[in-house]
Amino acid sequence: MDSTKKALSFDIGGTKTIYAIIDENGNFVTQKTKLATPDTADKIFDMFKNIIEENYTDIDIVTISTAGAVNLENTRVCSSTPNLPAGYPDIEFSKLTDKKVFVENDANCAVWSEYACGAAKDCKNTLMITLGTGIGGGVVSNGELVRGYTGAALEVGSMKIFADKRQKCTCGRYDCWESYASGTGLRNTAVAMAKTSPEYKNSLHKDKSPDELTTYDITEGEDKGDRFSELVFSQWHEYIFTGLVSLVDIFNPETVVISGGMGKFANVLQLEERINKESVVTPVKVKHAQTGNDAGMIGAALLGLRKL
Image 1 (tube, rainbow, N blue to C red):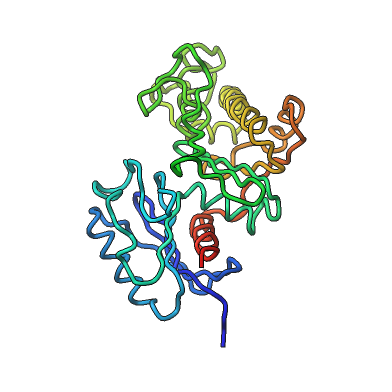
Image 2 (image 1 turned 90 degrees about the horizontal axis):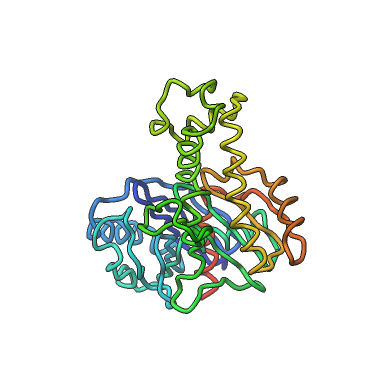
């Protein structure tokens, strides 16, 4: 008889929810299933409940990777989640089933996945940043997840990198790191540089007004050798470096892992060389993530199964 413990693990996002059964070694026991995320909190609860009932006899725990800060008891979301339906933070996940339900922030799940079986495997001090529309972050310190006083630690995207109110962030404050170093930040940089850079007049995008530029325009232009796009990418890397070198000095990780949709565009070798040249702490390795889109589910499962 198989005694390996198993989790029914969910990764819930604003548009889609993915789930699968994962064992205590991080292996997928079932195929992944992808569903559209329901448009109300009640429908999300009902969807979870039905899926749990279908898999009840095959699992030991239910684990959920989610946007938003999660309370220290890992039972509910305790912050706003603008990409999910109204009322989502009020869901009482423990009422889904009589089996244990474990909830954790998606960035925390991702860093644990990379630490347990990804790019930072066996690196007990790991920093991870996720570059997407915004920036998420997570840290494993001495083999334990850093969660902070209320469970909301590592909101690295909100870290201020300038003090003179240069650019307003989507959160309403000024000069958050993610307004410069995320996918949104790449576009912001392109728009600002297009208004002053002479290279823009001869770029692939010269027929667009600066405000019409998109992140895709710049990634495509850089791939085609467009000089303006290359300059934008260079400045974007400068912003990534600015935040990362500070985080490395604070957390002294053995490894930095970069993930997310925009993470693949980050030059990890260049960042590693610059950080090690300027950091005041022990040299660090910078790597691309390995567990990809499965990181949330894997991390949630492995973290939850540790609690049994």
